[in-house]
Image (cartoon, chains in turn purple, cyan, yellow, green):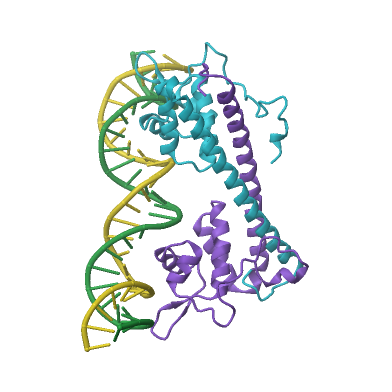
Length: 148
Length: 148
DNA sequence: CGCTTGCTTGGAGTGCACTCCAAGGTTCTA
DNA sequence: TAGAACCTTGGAGTGCACTCCAAGCAAGCG
């Protein structure tokens, strides 16, 4: 995802290069829409509720997003997939803004999230087993009594 | 997480014995609440929107749920975990009520759902990788410049 | 310069999945 | 046979996560 990858060659998830290199990264909202898949409405709303660190502005007040902002949005997107409530993500964003002394709390929050994700994966695998079972039934039998 | 393993003696998910044997399975709504974890409101709402096959009634009109209904609710619960919209589940319930000639469509619907679940699991595993990465960073470094 | 397209705001509206309410009838226990 | 606890209904309300609107300023082009 980000620079820290230099910890080794980890960073298994492809870093997904930014559309423009550092230094020229001043994206308009519509560019971010194209890149992130979110709507402009949603991007503005994220900022309003504190889910985005305050975005830079042009001299006339229009938003100019940075590569950093794009990275953050990608991370938020991942969290969103887990079903985490937006309020919790805002909480994490606040902790980040508050600085170093929230380090431990952030770590705890990430670990709790990881536990949730693992639980969710397990639940989905349980569901997958049920689906496999029913589909197998559909493949084999033809119209059986069970409320399939 | 693991469960799927037992592909041999299938029916891996414990059949989860019914609270009462066939023949005495006439549960009040509050018994179903205790067993399913859903609220009475939700159970009535499910019936109203057609997500429950019409539930049997006592001679005075109170609901009496059967083991069959419990099984159906358990399945709906699994589908709910996948994030499937209620409307889609209602569609499946309708197909069931319509009888044998909807067999193929039901099968298709289940298979599409399975594809969705697999996609969702893959997404969550991607998220898990990101979380692992960040947590590792938190464990190793102490307050670094990244917008972790 | 004028035109089109894009961006700004606060506030209101939408869709989903519940969740609750009021007013009354039912069932169980003492 | 009384009282508590449970059940019924249609319809209204809630919380979440967007989603859209109107009115106006900004930016790029021939």
